Amino acid sequence: MWEVKYKSLLGQDVTIDANVAIDLWELECLELLGAVFRTIYIPRLVLDTEIPHLASNLILLNPVQAEISSRRGWEFFRLLKCEFPALSEQDRLVMTTCYEIKTVCVSNDSGVRKACKSHRIQVTGLLGVLGCARIHSIISQDKLRTLIHKLTHTSCYISPNLIREFQDHFGLEESAG
Image (cartoon, rainbow, N blue to C red):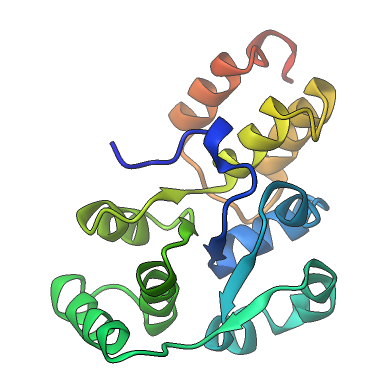
């Protein structure tokens, strides 16, 4: 499996897509991106079209606005359109940024995650960010429990089974709810 493990995420360079940024903003912990990761890349089109309302919050994290910068990148972008036609242009830009500059992809989107795995691009999602923050004591156990509980009151969709597995892994089940 090509998903990045929680512990190894700390200090990585990442490219984030809109869904994880929105989820963290709704959970009121967008700053975790800056606490967990070294450099945060966001494709300019994603920032301009999907999360312009977060721009003032994201600026505090000093993100790098990414653009495809090479022929190799454009070829990969076109390849993704053929292999995974359901991916949006923004999704393909996120993945191409990861491919071009070798960053971890941070997305909850199942299509993006499947395409990342197909191309051996490391991928994680919201739970990976939260898990890494907990493993490295950036957030407390109680804060993690609160954030997981709040997930049900956001636009985030993560399967209940995956949330239960996460809760079990972090010993949250017995005190959640």
